[in-house]
Image 1 (cartoon, rainbow, N blue to C red):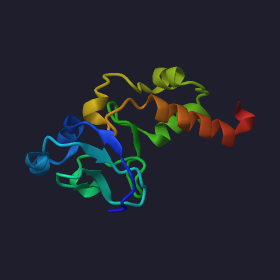
Image 2 (cartoon, rainbow, N blue to C red):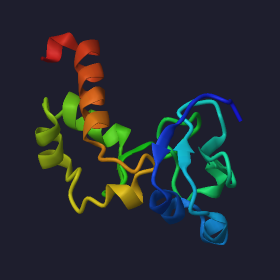
Image 3 (cartoon, rainbow, N blue to C red):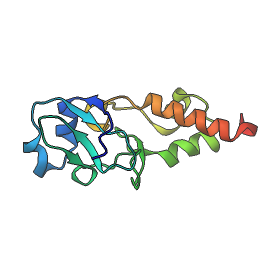
Image 4 (cartoon, rainbow, N blue to C red):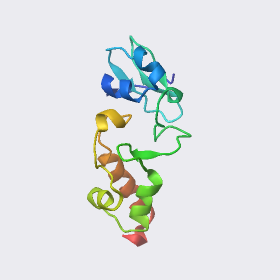
Length: 138
């Protein structure tokens, strides 16, 4: 464990994303999401078990080696698909990415996304990064 501070995440998120054989280990405790890309830990708490990337049903997009790199977990859209919508298809906003890719439809983020949150800010950050690296396309 990297011992870095984590981001609070709901128990329902943890319970839904661990592999079925680990569901019974998820306690009603305060879980945190490890944000360090190199750390194999995804969820941890002071009074409950720790869950590693290998114990989850989905890869955590920002963790080293994650494949595929889902950004929108509800619709299984990858970093590459969103990048293609921006670079090749001209999307400039989250709304345009959603229209072109189907991102953020059927949203059940609390259950599907390892952060337990909507992917909209991550999509916007990716758009900003891509546009700043390709200023001639703006």
